[in-house]
Amino acid sequence: MAVVDQPERVLIAGASGGIAAALGSEISQRFPDAELLTVSRRGEAPEGFTAAYHLQADLTDAGSVTQVAEFIAEKGAPPDWVICCCGILHTDDHGPEKALDQCEDAWLLESMRINVITHMHLARALSPALKPSHPLVWASLSAKVGSIGDNNLGGWYSYRMSKAALNMFVRNLSIEWGRRLDHCCVVAVHPGTTDTELSKPFQKNIREDKLYSAATSAERIVDVLAGLDEKRNGKLLFWDGEVLPW
Ligand SMILES: NC(=O)c1ccc[n+]([C@@H]2O[C@H](COP(=O)([O-])OP(=O)(O)OC[C@H]3O[C@@H](n4cnc5c(N)ncnc54)[C@H](OP(=O)(O)O)[C@@H]3O)[C@@H](O)[C@H]2O)c1
Image (cartoon, rainbow, N blue to C red; front, side):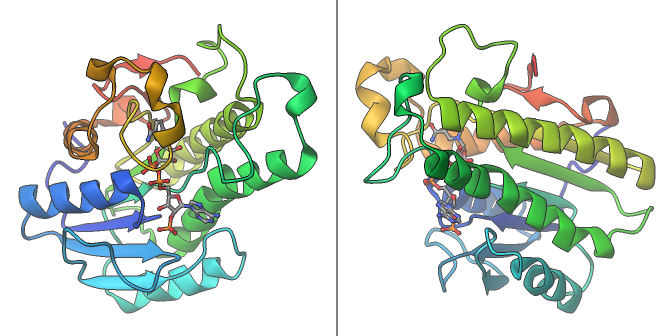
């Protein structure tokens, strides 16, 4: 049986991103009665859907744990779906490393801050609001390239290392919350290569039929989340729900 097939309250963090905005729009269409809460560094919720409540917060900042915890507490019942979309692959100054001699401490640490610590801060903020009887679906948007078992190509050191660390965080969280909550499913999800700012510089080598629109990826992610049962707790999932190796 699905843990939460009809969410009543959904929290989307990193809400201004390409996939996050499409998720907001997909969820509002599919579950019109669900209340949407968004968290973003931006002052306004993204266009394309209406969030009931929006919080401006930077989840890389430790102070965001209290800020988000207060936001959740003030708005009534905790969310039953939480989707953390925060992530980074490149900036104007840094692209993913092809070889060891391109690896820099500062970029690895920045990748860890945005790809891992944001998710940890969000979970810490949510934790005090969770009662054992409260059903919960948690999804961290991760990436297949963070799978150690699936890595046969190499490269992209900081992104791969930080997504592998995120995957371990998700696995740990699934064990802790799996013990604490009566019904929960905590997963990492690979959205597939999606046409957003994050993938823009790397799209020329992607076959046209393997580059998905944000709307398509959002539709698939929502399908996966709505079908999650407790047996999937602690898994890394492909966009079609297939289990990927860690
Ligand atoms: N697009 C793809 O092909 C693809 C493939 C595999 C996995 N993913 C994963 O899917 C997730 C969403 O990706 P996307 O394609 O939608 O990317 P995006 O449009 O670049 O959005 C990424 C989000 O991460 C947050 N973020 C970025 N830089 C940040 C910083 N310096 N500090 C704090 N937060 C920051 C932002 O949240 P706010 O500004 O709203 O706070 C932003 O909305 C990411 O975790 C990504 O790794 C994407």
